[in-house]
Length: 292
Image (cartoon, rainbow, N blue to C red; front, top):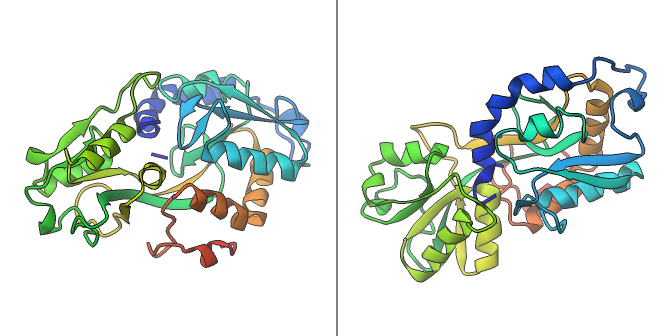
């Protein structure tokens, strides 16, 4: 279902507290005829719910993946683009989408029933980041013996921490906090800095964050962790989130995703997101140009 500085998973862990808000605040009216005036805050404006400091996903400067996707969709819809910013932690859904202040969350894991999800527009996974030339470039599972005795960075409380514990890696691991004040801290950046300096040998991050920060650092190798046989799943589909009542709006977003998948993929790849096909194979540039 991404996964700032791993606030994406803070969001997923906390957001269930707001699950009842969608039913309370969503408008009861829907329009099967496609009249979005019943569903949207302003039919002439694409109003996006976003986090102001959550790179690589979004920020107030419009530099994130989801900012670029919102720009693409606003252009296709010929609408003005506007944002309602709120930290992606407890209360995010309730204070944005649920309060009818905005109409779409641009990235949301499929299967989370806090919101109504669109069709997924990408599939990715947690990934292992290591220095090029470290000898760990071919490690594609946390069960690999090459990781024994290595110092591996992990965001505490995220799904791969369980996999690492099962693999016996936690005694030498370096944890980074999940719950941080992103005005001052950045767990993903701190992990990459430690990797560059040699304080850790490898790090595990949510795929979009792994790709983005590794690309910024340079001389890093990112390996999708798709071969885990124990612990929780590490592969997720990501779609968009709308209110439960907004059926016409969801159908319009699904149509936009289908018609613009190639452009969506290009944005994701430009940010270094490790895209996967339905068989867990990396989706290259040429394949990504094609709609599924």
